[in-house]
Length: 220
Length: 394
Image 1: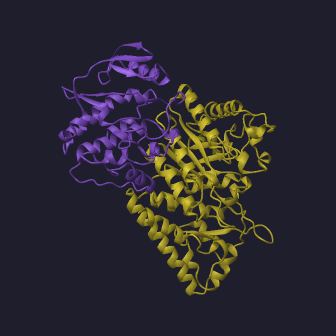
Image 2: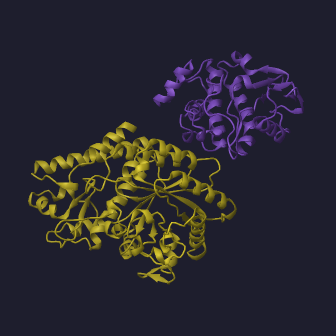
């Protein structure tokens, strides 16, 4: 059960629209119904049995096959969403549940953006997302938010799972400074089996990240 | 990489250079010099029109409205779908321009039967948002209009104000490389604004940002056509693959009034320039007398170039109106570009270009040892900048 304080708004509608549109997909939770109670909206969302990715991060450490398999599953879920011009904008381990069978489910499309519609969310980094946010989010460049913003977050998540640390710094200030410096380098070693994916997904400028989803998948 | 000759007036020079001397792989005809209906003849200067058009594209030069103030003097007004054919009374709307562009596309496919179509486009007052809006509108339209077997190249005119502005270049590239874009490639025109009467820009921002545009569009799998290039195209080619580079002669293109293609000499018309592969520069023809007197001709002579042999003869009556002057340039630049492009490994290609630059610098020194100090734009004002730029990228 999920509570939307303040009742229905545009943001609520958009999230529900996405859940409805992709309800046939296993990688997105199903909505069984909504209700209003004392001015608040209650959403009955499918309970996903499994672990939040943030709780099992250590099980991915140094495991190429496991990280790559997860990335491929996440791309499989997100590809139709990106193709329809939506962008999640808040991909992070806390928003990914790994089912008992190992398959991921992506949660919380609350700040997802329909690129063909007017924007309803603020620009910039959302609270709690600074670790996974792209440079254009740090810059507040709402006009440059796109599917390639999600590419960047997936790159950070993949790096974090494999190396158990962030590539560009450990505080939001460090990361912001690194982005501003334009220095795209990060520590990587020969053990990493998806280095090319990381290099391309983690380009600071969105236009420098692959144009095509398929091109990025091919680098995994 | 293919070299295309950008054809303006005196098209016979270009046709002869290609069909008789194998210079370049095809043509881009500039609408400024060729009126509507020009190609409705069986032969042009003795060459089969269909054969010419098979390896040709047509640049309808909508951007020329901005580039040249006297643009209406050319042939552009003979195309009823060209902005130049319509007085700008301020009432033109984006819908009106969109309609003209669509007609220009259909003209190339339905009348000229071209397989490679340049989508004309332009923007005024540096209004990039307006340009991006038009790109998106045309991209959307093309999704339903696109014909099988035809490639579509969107014109990307980059003003000097834009190319030296990192943020504007970022914004442009962000939109031009979006997942939704279905153009096969981009027809890139960049305003370089070299200093004074120089032909080559030595502005690092220009070099860096144009390189970014060319390399990024290529990386994102677009076909790239770098048009209106000078011989500095070699610098960009040394760093990134480019699919087509279009080169033109100064005489062919001077009517467009694009500054780097115009030549103004004191005391009458220009007598022309000798382009030397060994110096990677033009030498103003009067300076050849000094070079000859000081026995330096062999230092600058282009090897295996029949046009060079003719124009370096003592007593050659130099004139900018003589075809061999310009064919020497076309052949020399075609060779430089082809030689570089033949090196597949980009790092090796960069090294090869740096070596060419080092050789050219050494040749300038050799000339000086002989008491030959070249002046004005014939001096070495560009080679150190090129070398620094290439080293910064390698």
